[in-house]
Amino acid sequence: MDREKAKQLLELCRPGHEGDRLDPALAEAIIDLETDPELEAWFDEQQLVDARISDQFQSIQAPAGLKDTILAGMHLHAANKVTREAVDTAQNATPFPVQGRMRSRRIASWVGIAAGVGIAALFLLAFALLYLPRETPTSAFTQAEIPPVIQFLSDEIDTLNPSKFDKRDPNPENLRRFLASNQSPAPQSLPAMLKDVPTIGCLTFQFEGARLSMICFKNGAVYHLVTAEKASFPGEISKVPQIFELQDKAFRLWTEGKQIKILTIHGSKNDFPEII
Image (cartoon, rainbow, N blue to C red; front, side):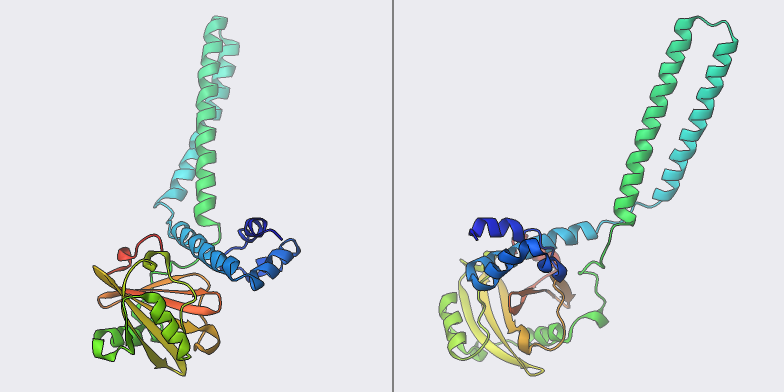
């Protein structure tokens, strides 16, 4: 299948919905995804973008008092209908000029239409905000819900010393090759925001039987990119990217192909560039 055609079909896959991949209409595109590394890298990045957009929609909260506003609109519409019927009855029984009766009816009709449109809009908003499937915002985690690996990395970063680096090099590609040659997880791809950022060095950790690699980047701010293999990583990781804040650091955790990645910076979640 042509790669562009495959991309169009794969865009139908929603982040975190593995069942989408079982759709017979996507079968050929899924086969290409599993055999085309470039297509797989594009798909993983596309999933991250879709998940980030979903996160933004999921964080929308229904306005306070929305239910009362909808009910008030319904009562207003009902009252207007009764008033309009009363006016029509009175006009039919009173020798008002025809032109006056028609003007009154037009005004009443426009009031009814406006009320109806307003109520319809409120109902649509209420349905979207209250009844569409929602997930807990990924950034709203309590201290107890922070994964152990995040706490572990936070402690390691606090005590990080250049003397601990397994290799120092300003070129990220050299560090990736070094990690791979030492059977350590090497990121198959770098986040777009880091591709042209010089590196400081890399090192590896052992965490609950899993091997973690870290590449440190510096471009004014310091970024730490941690990579692990899914097969050896302890516990399940959500398909939807998650953001955690711990002490003076923010962490973004996501899956990419057969790897798990964690990007951390000093600061808050608001310090993460949008392009990640």
